[in-house]
Image (cartoon, rainbow, N blue to C red; front, side, top):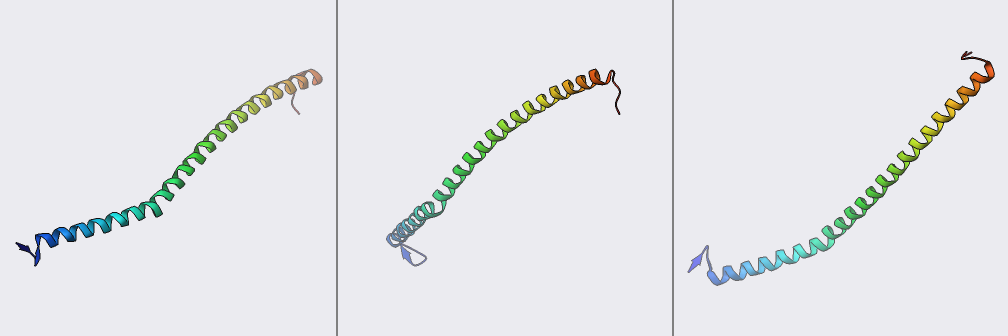
Length: 90
């Protein structure tokens, strides 16, 4: 029995050769391209997570500094009132 000039055994051999060839190419592709890319993405995700944590800490510090400045401003304003004898602004 033949199909497009090849017997069933020849088709099976051709499919086996093509399957092996594509399997090898796929293995090499994964090793050369996919694995390093996956590692780079994982490292990038780790860096982003660390950056988010640092930004959160920075935001917390900024809020604490803002609160300290507001308290200091109130104290200075109170002292100015005491020194000037009223709530007059020049």
